[in-house]
View 1 (tube, rainbow, N blue to C red):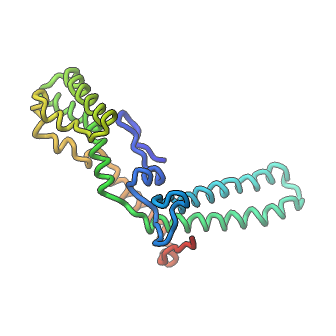
View 2 (view 1 turned 60 degrees about the vertical axis):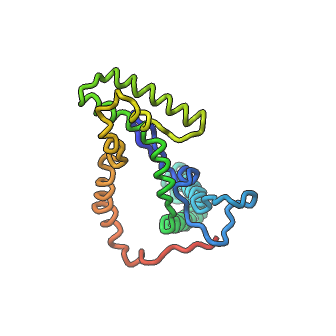
View 3 (view 1 turned 180 degrees about the horizontal axis):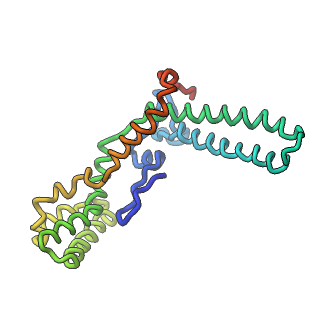
Length: 230
């Protein structure tokens, strides 16, 4: 699971967590059954299969390690039967795991509107630091600004957690005369793109400099799609 660490809240990017938030889903066949007990569910069957295969593949590593620890480089055959099973299973498991992952990524379904709604709910709290900095640049006292926005944040948080309503922190800031110096800047201060730093450029660079050169020798093998039998 990946996190953005720092003073701001952690943002989870684990595929099953995001599926739980209804932000994305793995491919789902027309007649596929998501759950025998709950028909509405779309269980991440392929991703769960990947987890299962990955666990099995990790355990196979111990076979040659245990053999090496006991064999002492002697000319014995106590590694023969073990090797015939472990090596073959490792390659077959890795192949099945990678094929399943390829199928997931090729058919990944993303729901931008759900993501947008979640951002609208969480971003106002994350943007408080930007708002404080903008207020200070406008001549405000940092401690006073911190206290003002802390009170408004607690009020908005209570509305979300106790009343089940939407996050209205931005509206509270707009209605506060204290924050008048930044009212015209709020849209810019709330721009989600300003919170990702160099991540887009870093991803593009990694793909161009690392991933694409590594895949280049296998271009002819990457033309087909991965099909699974459910």
